[in-house]
Image (tube, rainbow, N blue to C red; front, side, top):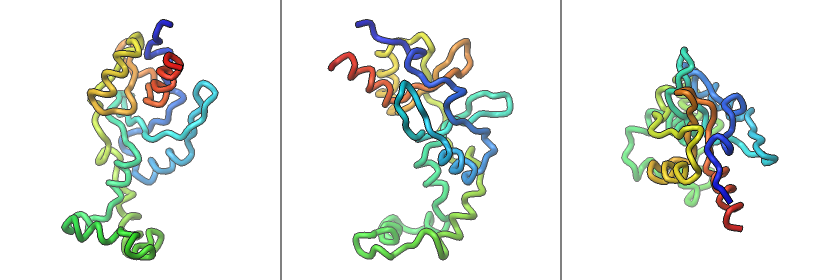
Length: 174
């Protein structure tokens, strides 16, 4: 079996959620919440959004965990790590922190107005549309990434996700 190329397993850009860098964290959350990916008869939820500038140049990726980090109230950031951990230790008290009301909720609402560009991750690796699966795997492993932008003629044309790469490996092995 001949391994596939990045362009054959990618999700085309027009089918993958993406936003401009000036979107707020609240808008990014809304985009992730309404997005659903159907690729090769499999449906999943995106874990990240691509972030572009005004000229439609890819600037970065904002993942769910980046949004969580961005929503962390500022007053928690200055606390010592053990103290911060105790605030969210539900093993001690499951009612310890209610994220829907109170000081934490108010602070998260305020943090949600910052731009995604403040928490996004820069692009550290890409693959070319014609790159073989082995190169895609190498880049994902060496850069510890679960998604890579796919370029063709220096433009982003899609993304390859680790779940889709894994599916291709399963097809080869099983």
